[in-house]
Length: 95
Image (cartoon, rainbow, N blue to C red; front, top):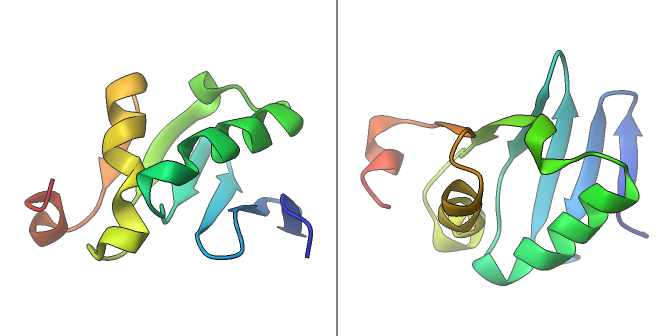
């Protein structure tokens, strides 16, 4: 499967074959899941291909705190401090 891949009208699969992120479109955009920090630049390139500027992303959603699901988030949060992280208190304590 070639990424990015549109799953539904409002959900697009991004990332790589090993680390998936989901771009969810509503009034703004949210990123669900994360992957390792090395996926950051391919992910940003995919956003560019989709004409989605990082400024349009308002939320980063972490489902669980395994490193291979969340390590891109600290990198994105540092670069784009307006993005709100949505997760449990337990997950938040890990970074």
